[in-house]
Length: 429
Image (cartoon, rainbow, N blue to C red; front, side):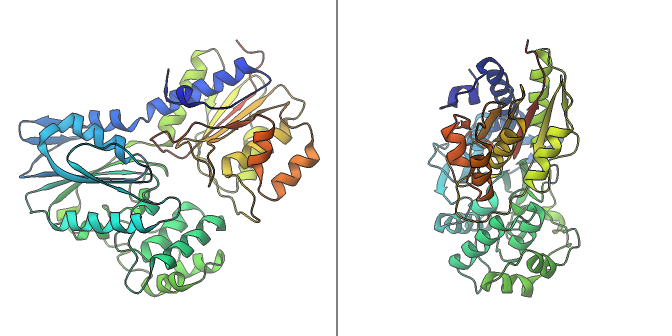
């Protein structure tokens, strides 16, 4: 039994066999992006040296810094590959976890940074500043790290950063814009952690935002180049205000576009991303006899528009897999997340049809709820008026729960953004 299948809580559906196919495809996707295995297979011990990708590192001491939602499992993967070559390290994540004996654990906040996030960032700074030029730091980076590892710039408080992050998350801004703002007010983001490191760095990334390693966790250990959008324009467009926003305006451009010194420009390898998960789900459904296509363009833009496009562009008799991350501007105090919002829209659109949709976060957490997302079909929405009322106030969670379409997996230990499956393949094998 795989990760998702083992963690499915309460999910009732009118077509259990078909639902199981979607859950099994989700399970296959999670197995493909399992952090422990990915790290273990990417590191090799050769005597007292470490091979990472095509490069061999001889190091006096090897240290490990793991941060993000996948940090504990990534740290265990490094431990299994390198054993006693590792002489100390730090794991910063958002849940209580077992970590290797050489690691100190700091539990931090997500999606909003907390005091643990600040403690983790300062512990990471102390770690890299303690290293010698002949030492090697293996940075294991995963999604969620932007909140999990954070230290406010001079003149700002944790409260300032929490307010800023709260505004950014609710604004509907794309992740690239959010991270550009976050980098401007941080002591560690945008390669700043790397500039404080006295040794060499190699970074292994489990990406929730595509193939660019500098975007994951806002890139503490890699060089960052922004897309050229003025930071002030981002703040104005999404109406971001407060002390941290004013600080961001003052610090706009600091380090942006400037490569790190050669000593720090070491490998940054993407171990897996959302397309790794998407390909695995597509392969699984195809092997069951369903004509399935993986959408080549990642999910982006407003959640409602994205799910409607996914529904309209999937032909009858086929299934379509979509991966990435949409944006949802939240109004009101309803419960839910972008995947639950997408699932509820799909339930309304599919009413009376034989089709179904799975919309889920690969980390097992969708928005500030205990659900991963939802799985709906043509019977999920019997009262479209009530469903639309919930949708209008961004309150998808209670509706999906009431109709048995809420999907709970618990935290999966990995994170490569969202996975949607639009399934119009009937009859089922």
